[in-house]
Length: 104
Image (cartoon, rainbow, N blue to C red):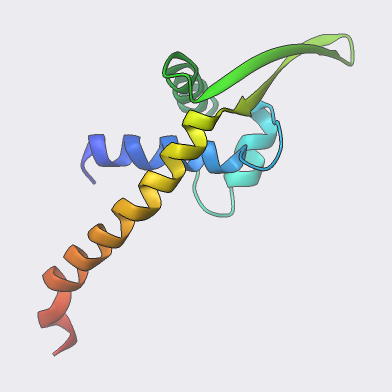
């Protein structure tokens, strides 16, 4: 898969994982696991990129004697998910065109 396409897909997946509630790294990986495997190093790179792009915010909370970062989606992050949904319709249309011979 094209690295840029995969990167964009993973960004949206992470945003979707925190869309309904604030979350932290381990829980995000756990929530995404049924759909996609994601390493901690990849996740934290994505989270940092999304934070810089103002698509999420971060707060630190003490939990069990350790500090845990919680991530919250911003309006810009929600807008990115909506944009992705619209883009996906076009991607599926292209996919149907490319695979139409396979169906015949």
